[in-house]
Amino acid sequence: MAVAVLLGVLVLVVGGCVCVVWAERGGPRWVRVVAALTRGAGELLHSAGKSSRGGGSRSSGDDGDGD
Image 1 (cartoon, rainbow, N blue to C red):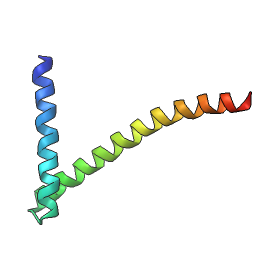
Image 2: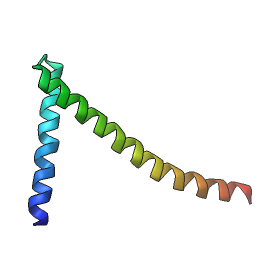
Image 3: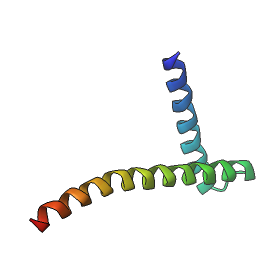
Image 4: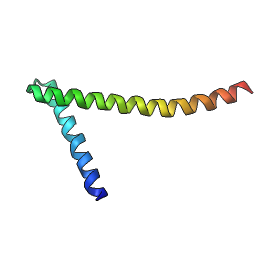
């Protein structure tokens, strides 16, 4: 079951990347919509990863500098 879910996620990611490339070359409207959604999801994931990693390293760095 888990393999099927991971395979489905992989298909969605690859399909989104294909739509981003196709939209850059002037694809149809639905491709541009999917590309915009893919980029937005990527930016959300990127910022979420940045805040979780950056917040932990900053707090540990601040504790070390104050002593």
